[in-house]
Length: 506
Image 1 (cartoon, helix red, strand yellow):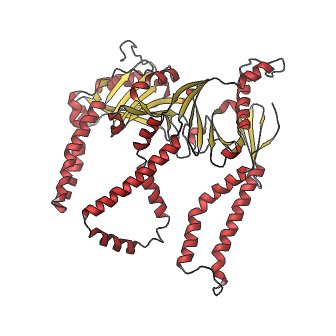
Image 2 (cartoon, rainbow, N blue to C red):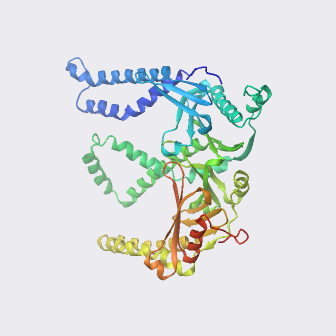
Image 3 (tube, one colour):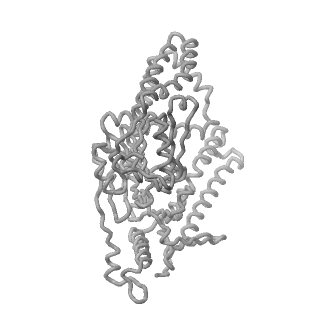
């Protein structure tokens, strides 16, 4: 195997510099804005100490730039002994050896800086990446040819390990080497523009926009004149409730428009293809992303239907994968961000032949119905009484919570169900959205049965299972089912457990 050393593209220095600036942007703004508020703008008659923040800022910028250049110059990688080897660091030189047989996936990102130079950022995940939010390795900027070379070296290592297509020296012969470079891609799904717009308008990203605005404002809490703003708000409230409600509505509309734009940019030209034993997701307009998911690492399939999308027959399909998050926030991988529910069976069967996506559900018994809304009434009644008393007569509108809780409880009752086969447990339940989990027995980390004294009187119980997914894992729970059925599921989970596949029940 080649021991030639490779460097990253010089644009890596710029990328590292921008990364450093992102961590410093808020401190910089606070320092310079605070200096302005204190009358610290430089002029000829001011003391030289007023220039100190600007000098410090320039020095820090230079240090960040130099640091980015050093990181680029000192970062090298090469291939040796069926490993990807990386060396980096100036004063403390670090080396990282990643065996090819541990590499699970390559994720590609093309930002605005990468695309003019036909470069990509490559993040490499291994079998142990699930215990950390950081990828095993990150190549900040390399050419697409260099990225393809890494994949080819990985394929060569796999061929050598299986002792196929090698000569007497253990090397891959020429024709087979060319074949390794061609990996057949099977198209699975491509999101239409209509579905993209529906996804964007129903994404719920308005909460992300508002929370992002809140985080931004907290960075400048010391500089915001809250007393003056409060006085202005008090004056504004005198114009009437209608004007206030109208302004809030306008603000929500603007936040919603921003969320639609962000979602559209993120999921533009979303496509799914299958390459051998991997699923490849591609998406993005300004920043293109390519995520690979080894089918062997998929722990479970989760289908999510929020009320609005369910009304029109749409759902989201999420892959629960060991270590499979999109970024350091442990964001789950949406295999189908938005798709008609009646159209997902065929592509799911094509990708996951071992799963059964045609469940025959065992639902909660009728005597379990009060359990789904009775407890909610216990804590919401004091709230309704308090609001109605202290904010009479407008507080009486809080009484509308009672029918809402009752309807939601009935909705949750009708959604609760289980389905069992010899090798798979399927669960269905609802919070506000409806969730359907498909989990193979061998992938389950734990299975727990819970029974309260009230459930015991009615011969009911709850069941909860956990699988490995990303950093935090994933949990599915169905409440208030027949205790006998739950006990049979617990027996099924034992090593000697058995299920009659014809009946689909233990």
